[in-house]
Length: 158
Image (cartoon, rainbow, N blue to C red; front, side, top):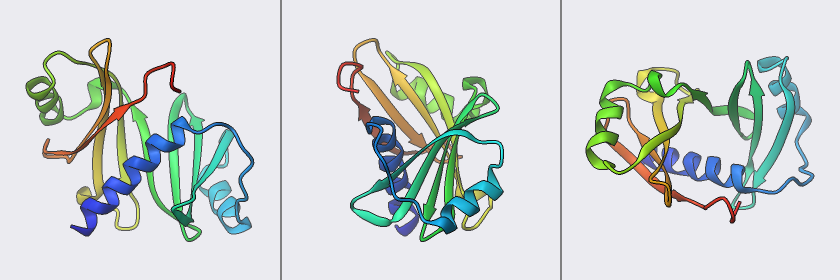
């Protein structure tokens, strides 16, 4: 249950991070230093914090042409979501999407790594899907089972 809650919190964070407007965020020197060690070539980093979780700091950036969100909890890297190619989604995840979202097409894909315990159980896959009118983000466990679904705002709301 605790893992599922963590997944849910991170996914909500990812969505809120993308929807936020640019604003100045106070980032601790420890997080900045840790981030610089992990991602020395990162450019145009957008920092954010969640008012509901003041010990969490998020960095959104592009590296090697891929969007990455690094999530720090109490100054330590907790998770990162890396944009991936749609073809790189596991077959079981694609099969789940095909079966349960027949009228939708995949627009974007990502792989979530929970780094607190780096093993195969700390990975999730996400896909942004749309039917032309409604967009959703679907998160799945590596075995293809759905973790959660979030409705995304339409382009006018962003």
